[in-house]
Length: 87
Image (cartoon, rainbow, N blue to C red; front, side, top):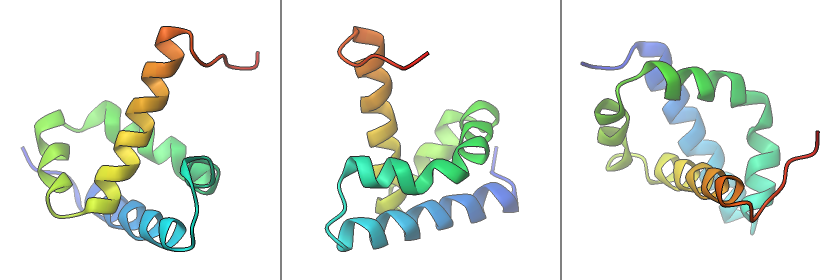
């Protein structure tokens, strides 16, 4: 199953923004803050697209891959209790 044109465009946007932020010496925190406005779209992508289809884009868009790894790491820290969320 392939991704929609909108999903593909979102991946390209995430890739581009990630590269710009990291090239300007941004860290994971800066990346998360800058991507905050896109989170509803990113969540929809994660929830609706097949994991295998998303993973195919990791090879083509390394900025997208890096951002998804940051989200994965953040989720793991929350799950392990190493990071608490404000209520």
